[in-house]
Amino acid sequence: MRRPTEISLTIILLLLASVNVFSQEQTTWEKYHEAGRQALERGDYAEAETQLKAALKEASAFSLKDQRLTETLNTLAGVYRAAGRFDEAETLYRRTLSITEAALGPEHLTVAASLNNLALLLYTRGRYDEVTTLLRRALSITEKELGPEHADVAGRLTSLAQVYRVQRNYVEAEPLLLRAVAIREKALGAEHEDVAVALDNLAALYNAQKKYSMAEPLLKRSLAIKTKALGPEHIQVALALENYADTLSKLKRNAEATELRARAKSIWAKVMKKKKTTPATPNGA
Image 1 (spheres, rainbow, N blue to C red):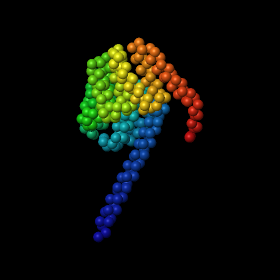
Image 2 (spheres, rainbow, N blue to C red):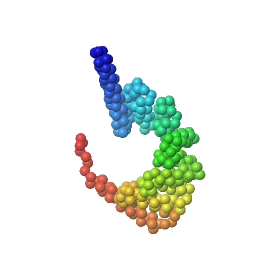
Image 3 (tube, helix red, strand yellow):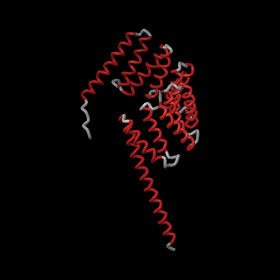
Image 4 (cartoon, rainbow, N blue to C red):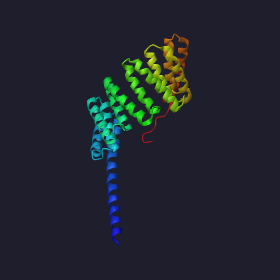
């Protein structure tokens, strides 16, 4: 009658041993990955690469479905991208995408994120046709998984519109940005900061086409949202004032533009004064 008890104890001991091994793997991987991430933030790319390669060696023993593997690849790709080693970064982003598709399926939201990371890299290299294909697929996945009116869809629309904008394909860009504004208004509320960002993006598109009269009310509304959400002395409000003033100048409304620039200058002066009078934080505090 004692044998079942002995079997149970054996199972428990095996489980505990497995937990200890996993904890050790987690701790080792975390140590290397965090050290690499911090080195990247400092701009020490050589040290970041060393630490992240060690983390990758640990993560390579994990399951393909273990997010630590793709997280390590993405972080290391970020190091290569920051260091201007674009070919190596692209290789890692493509490897991440391949692993994610195999592990989670081609329509998973994580795949959309991988597509977006690769697209951002290729965008900096001017490979716009490839970027468009990647972003369209990321948009399709996001719409399917979250619904066409989810706030994340607005972000995908904005990214795709930006690619069209730099190619001066304004006809394709405009409906995407109009939709992004509508989605954010519905999902987040008409006075949310992200709505102001969407309005700024649409205004920038109109300004690029010299459609200043269409950009003006968008920038005016964006300024009002930011002032209410952030307060009248915020840096973002100063930037909004300057953007609005530039468009007013294009419309020959110079007196209004001068007034807005004076307000922005006053905010910047207060920000700089505050920065100079704020005591430095002691080391180790």
